[in-house]
Image (cartoon, rainbow, N blue to C red):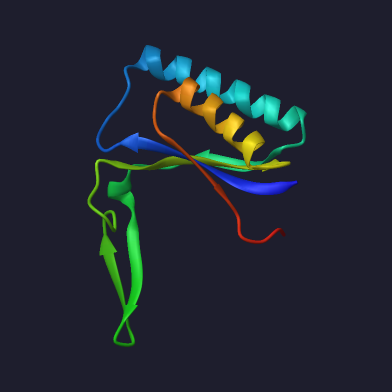
Length: 115
């Protein structure tokens, strides 16, 4: 089994109405339960908005910290799942299900090395 990131992209500043959010969360948790049942779930979680981020970088030997997102964009990672899948096609199928459940773009990306 290989390890994959399922990145869930949210529109910047966009929030769903409570009834739609309840449906999305119900469907996402159903996917998580299926992943757990097949021993494919590693871990995951939701993130606060990108405006809460702090970027840490070293420039000319000095550590700099900047509030807010590193990149200006219309979408930011709002949550993620780390899964195990036998191959990319299987991981993409999970990504498709997340996209259908959330209605937002999903990125499926393999890890370089297995741990």
